[in-house]
Image 1: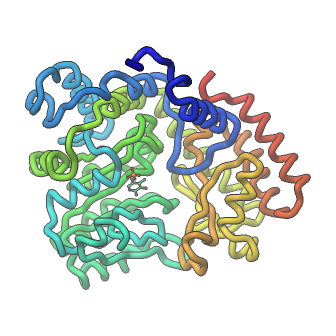
Image 2 (image 1 turned 180 degrees about the vertical axis):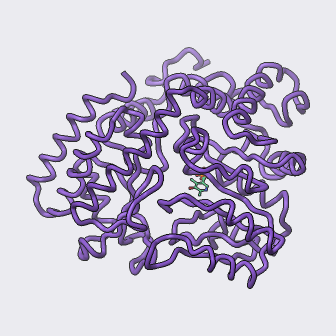
Image 3 (image 1 turned 135 degrees about the vertical axis):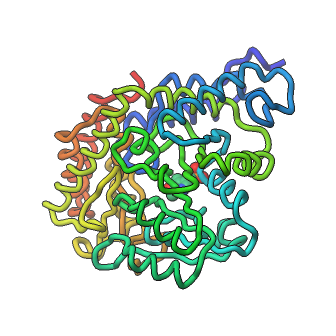
Length: 416
Ligand SMILES: *Cc1c(COP(=O)(O)O)cnc(C)c1O
């Protein structure tokens, strides 16, 4: 039995990779908008013996014995989610945001039914009907876009498109749209064409929970989210709905889309949601947005173009084509990475380069805010980013920025 052997003797390569990944996170500025750092408490819940337990079904109605303790965990997660979001019904079992969306589609659509969603290259998500994803293969998908001049969704155009395509489901929500959605307006459009409304708040789950981003719960039959982006509850998904759809959603998650729930992840959600119910989390979420706005201000002062000219939330989308026409998103990502600033290349509305190259970068503040960085530090970070982009061939600049990054990382550790 290898049960009593330490990780580093069973698998030195995994042990080393885990240590190095932790060091990498500590020693770089993580600005990928979809990433964050969970607490030690969430790590502990996720790395627990709950991973051993099968719990197909729901609390009080499982297909396996011995579920009394995992029932408590799942009930806690559900209760906290209801308190955070004010939803009638919550299912905390989706393994990911994509599977949360899958469960909504399975609950209310038949194959070949039609979906109207935001295009991927304008900020949407693969699971909203992209051809490489099951959603694009099973359903008939039409997509709306942002106005190329303003970077904002044109709701009149969305309404016109909805009337034209008569979808069964309208999907709001995005991965790279820096503005709040007008959920009420989308609900009116959905009503007008007799469609249901799915609001996918994956990126803004924490901001909605804290009340710093509008909540779609009153304006959508279904709300799906991630639990690891702006809320720090470990990887996973969540789906909320009106009571009338509760049974359909539950059976669409299990057995429709998934088998047994990952109870260690459900425990992570329970712990992360409990943390999100504190005043400290509300302050955190406000700071996330304040930090993003400050970052945006400095970027604009220093001549960068931002899609929609700014942000309402935790992320910015920099369109490099005006300020740095020769620099691709891919190059920018790599240059910044050399200096210890981790962002991702991203397509921008009206993109002219391939998705593997792109003309933009997406920059987010959730993880840095978790470390404790505030507006003053965001100014430093913003200057560092623009300095690197302005001098792509100057190693002196990269080195100087790298040492500023080091100083910030040392001053604001993640795990003490
Ligand atoms: C991140 C994201 C998801 C979920 O992604 P997973 O990786 O499957 O958890 C879903 N929708 C949107 C809009 C997202 O940004």
